[in-house]
Length: 142
Image (cartoon, rainbow, N blue to C red; front, side):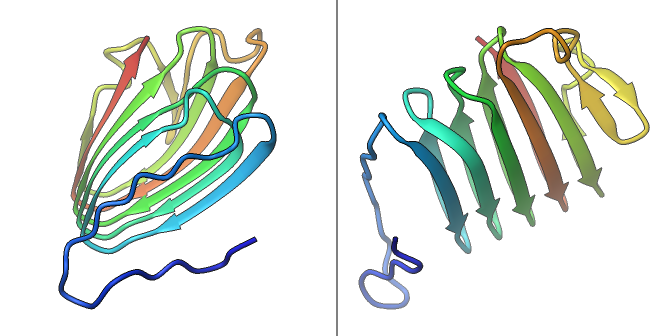
């Protein structure tokens, strides 16, 4: 277990390419400031994701091998999620000035919760709590 990674000096750009074990369940907690985050989790058994960013560009690809609880908390950001069509999805959105495409891709809205039509019947699910300031939030089903 490693609670903190810090590389390099302040003011320098950093690029990381991390490869993780795809055989064991994983909890990922990622906290960044101004950043560009491209997370391909599709081959991993991520059971919990906590992404906390400032001004950021985020692309996250989920897989359907296990159910996932996720929390995304961002400031000014762009968020694009790639979610398998077979995965039941529920998104609780606490958003201020955020544009999204959830209704356009088939999610039902009730209050601040958006749910895919297969949420109750899917073998695996993603439950996402989203807190975003001025953002663009998109879901692409694959």
